Image (cartoon, rainbow, N blue to C red; front, side):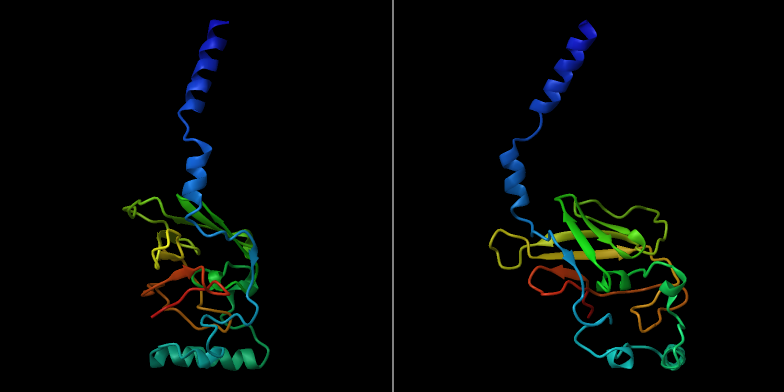
Length: 205
């Protein structure tokens, strides 16, 4: 009986130590409400403002441009060259974020979860202030650390700035097969998710 009382007291103490619900609501009010299932309404290229394929103007060196031209020629004949998802591999980053299949966002102060319909992948973007681990095991979706930004000072976050490391291949930029280097070393200068865009996508400079 004494043990039951002690356990009950511990449970009560734990409950009383929790912050009031109003505190949670106040914190969450700063974050965007992404409750919906997002999907691209146009095409599935990396940069939706440009045509697919060579219209993307990807900065490929001659060797990789020749590889991409060969991929494009194969696709024009109905082939699936360099379309790794056709063999049931995940799209990998950044292709996974294009939204060619539905995406769900679950926003919490510590982590923003991105649930990808294709292959049922779950991307975690840590926003709790942590640093990078000494060792990262490469995955198709990578390891992401981000920070929320209030650009206009209205007390609400409108941009999630994200850095992702630890990529695993094979992967391409988008469905057209724009290639990465075979060693999977990748630099994306900036990547963000903005609440002001009608479609959520990654941007590069």
